[in-house]
Length: 160
Image (cartoon, rainbow, N blue to C red; front, side):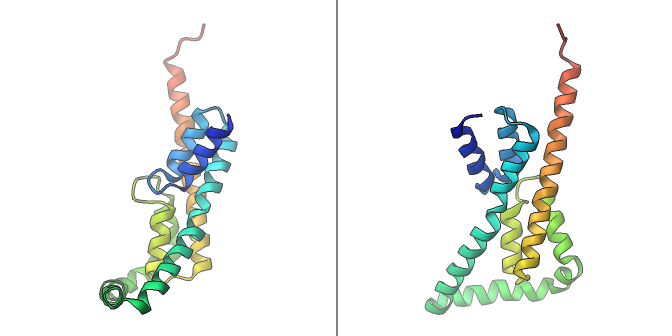
């Protein structure tokens, strides 16, 4: 695997749409061993939480005190939503966050998990741990799918 492929894997791991579920297969199919592909994809995807969390906090702190429309919009939508689903957050909390991030499907992953934990005011350290655990579980699921697919593919290939 060459440097551009490694950089593309890192980019895919950080990108909101592909995240780990795109980075890991990309690295694997471009010649990296599955453990190395998983390590690179997971490392890149773990960067999402601190980067997005810092961005959201900075953005919120900047706009909240300066722009009334943002303050009103935030208070109406986010704070009222927090109150409505407070009981669900208390019930499922960090385990729910981990499982949500672990599902390797579109709209789930580190970005959505980080955004949700920030919006619902979850403890940052615990949320980071939950998102990280979800990323590791997602990597395991994607790796198993890759291995199962490779095994299934080999059934249909005649060995010469």
